[in-house]
Length: 31
Image 1 (tube, rainbow, N blue to C red):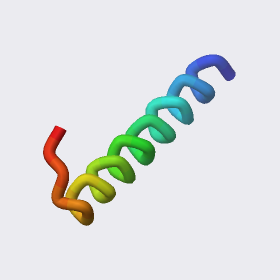
Image 2: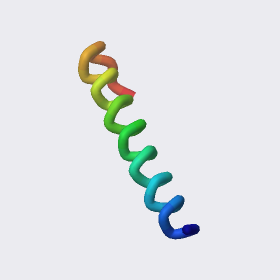
Image 3: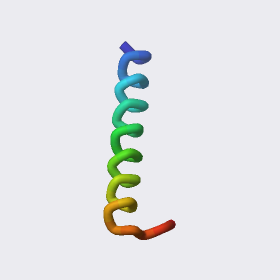
């Protein structure tokens, strides 16, 4: 169960990072 929650956390982190990258690309801002 612990490994499953860790996997879910990694997947959520990847989703959040990709969303941030998409936002940066759409606005054209470079961080």
